[in-house]
Image (cartoon, rainbow, N blue to C red; front, side, top):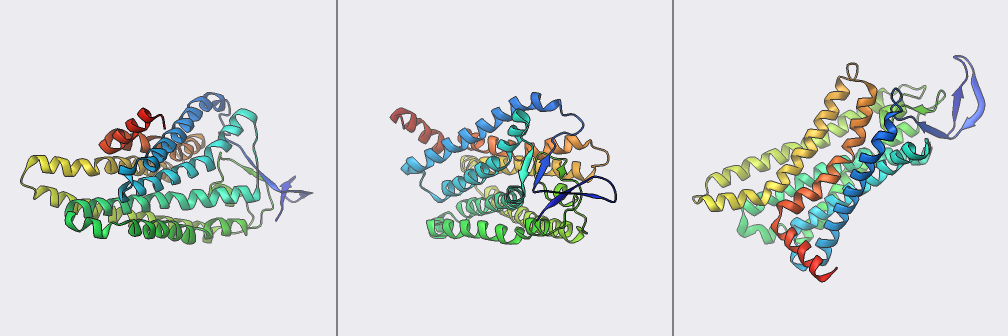
Length: 319
């Protein structure tokens, strides 16, 4: 597939172009140098914190439990999502490397579209884990086993990869006959597909329906799980037992709050895109792939007693 640069409304250059050009902040390109420092620090924080959490869970035998295996999966998803987006953004800011090949662009699109609902699905499984732990503690070892985690992980990856792979496939099959300049830091589906000369209605509808069906169903199940958890906690007769039960899912609730709040902000700003400057929308899309990965391991690390103890043991042993 080739893209031809537009030379006039009726003529196209005969020179084929096999790459897209990413233009971050088309109206305020002077922002790039100022933003590169906080973005690079957040990126290093996200990579370092998630890697530390993974190493701690891997090396500390007391953390070899389903709850921490699910947290490890969340860390891996965060790291892949971060590595897919942020290095390219920083390369644009620092070295003006704006070009991206077709295959790399659509691979990035696939990861961004599929890994986001993978994270929401992981949160849903983690909510179910907390529901069983609090509402059915005696049955927890038989229900939430290592085999359950393996099956849940396979389901999380397969469901979202299969149902959202049509998004980049539909975009890749479009006929691109105009400009190859993407006014975005990332290969977002709509930013790329609107460059084509074809009708993109099917593309837009599929992404909207599939994405919101998956995210919506996950959040509904999370909401239902927490309703049952709160009902079970309210029935506990001692205050200490209630506090202990809530503390086990406090970190999980905070992570969901981070994830959903940033997602809602991105959605609302895109809905009101005519009133919000394009550069703000682009910045929010970039931060949405960076802030949750940076905050998730820190929240869990500070809130979970077992993780703090495991990390302290590793420091004492010098890894």
